[in-house]
Image (tube, rainbow, N blue to C red; front, top):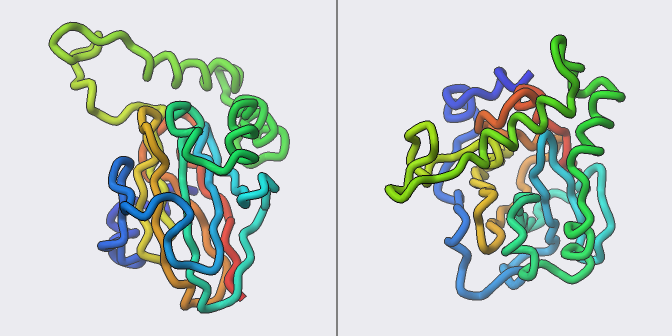
Length: 211
């Protein structure tokens, strides 16, 4: 499924542009202070996305009217140093967030297929173990990779149809934030375009409805 959203396709159809923000590049005004009518907090995890409002209520679908200035604050479920920058109800949810249980639910409902030669728990742990390789004194991991390279714990969130591309890093010390105007009606997917392991091709979720 995610193959439909390879980088060439996205660049041709989604117009990925200057609204992209990466962790550490938040505006000085701070989280939640960006001009906008609606703010939602997106948690990127293996292998899916979850959306919450500032009260900590989870939304299966973000529904907003056309012309809304929508602020998306995204965070990786592993970026515990950044939890304190979120509204307290969202921070509390993240402290107990169980990504593995959610992933297993995706297998049960058919969103992610069961691996043929392993359990979903095993491929989940494999992705995490790969990302937690120790680093040597030269800043490289056991396989010789630079420690600043993306790992399977990191995700790249895009919203095809809107100029949104956000690196949601597991090592971030603050969430990443962007705002955009919902000037096109329809239903839009949230997609991860960084290879984050077994479930990556299925990390596509219909999450935004503009009416």
